[in-house]
Image 1 (cartoon, rainbow, N blue to C red):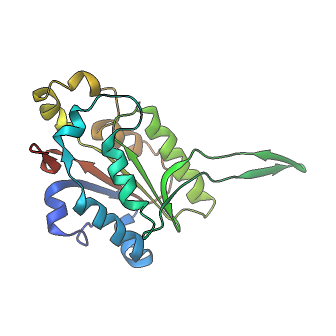
Image 2: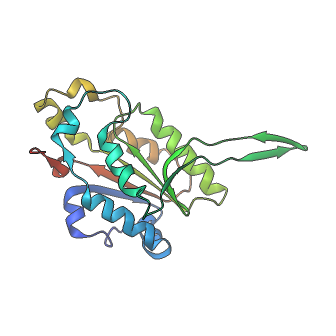
Image 3: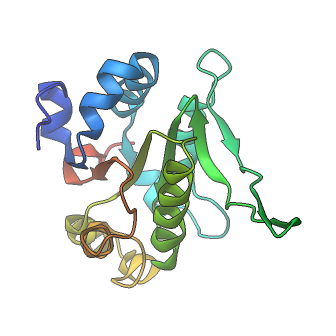
Amino acid sequence: MSLKNIPANLLKRYRFDERRHASAILQQDFSSEWEDLLACLDAFKLRRSDILAAGGGRSAIPKALDGFLQHPSRGWKKKRFEIVVKVDGIELPTPTHEIDNVKNRVGVEVEWNNKTEFYDRDLNNFRLLHQLGVLSVGVIITRQSELRTIFEQLGKWDSYGTTSTHWDKLIPKIDGGGAGGCPLLLVGLGPECYDPNS
């Protein structure tokens, strides 16, 4: 695993992991998407006010990441791929789940505080789309498990808990082969991203 092409300031703020040389593929073959992703992470702050905000619907935290990528100048979009399998002349539609952000052949999912089954959905999507030759790299941005300390200090641990999406739930699913052969870049939002004054 080589993450040497990730800037040092981001290595200090985020936890990174990869499978099948994802960062090298991004840098070499998808340089525009790679620059977008790095700029998004550089601009992001985990705001105290966003953690304290009432629940319900997609929170401001994933919206900030999605919003950065989906700015019209960058061209990322939510996308659902329509796949049709033909068996003995009969077409069987096999639509995929919507990916949060897609540009060219790169997909980025932001899993901040969902049920862990969302990881299975994301990884299966990446596996299938890579196998069909329409996705080259999948990226998952999620929260580090170490954020628990901050959530407890803010009295918000009950809103997150250990059964929702976080790093320690994701890695076993990947190590178990959930994404098949799809190259993956994993990004963990952690305590170093936290801004207690915002």
